[in-house]
Image (cartoon, rainbow, N blue to C red; front, side, top):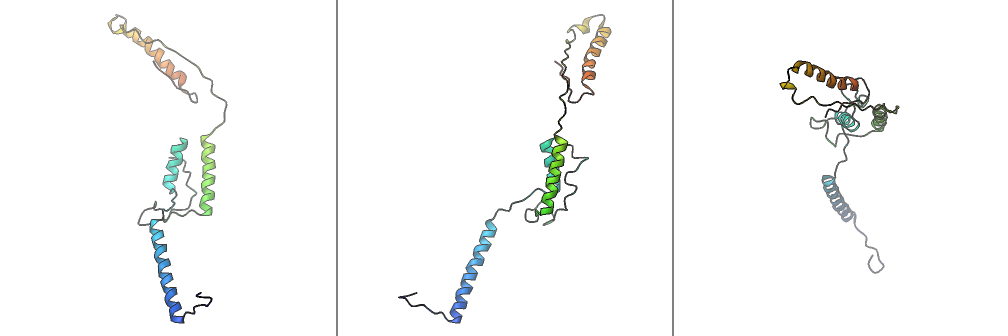
Length: 161
């Protein structure tokens, strides 16, 4: 408005103004798209390995991503962020897999009974004695019994000084 009066554009002037504005908007959108960071998700293999590493699970025989849909590929790769789309179906499958992984990793059971066993080290001069073989057999059995006590117990281990 100038001095209370409206400026009327002709049809060609209006078309030129719209074309200029569209050109500016398209250029701006393309520039924004180039600088945009793509939010990416893990593909099936990355998901399986990450769950295994984080929770200490053996994912060789159990694949948490077995029910996931196949990953899309882009440029011959299956880990390109532009092609990895998160659908509602995939998200529900990921939540189910996470629940199952936590059930496998966290087990609430009674705490195992702890037992301390100590053994004395063999005599340092056993090689020089006449009863070397007899002495070695006695001490070998003593040390091997430590391993035998730790085997077969859940979470059991032997510490040898």
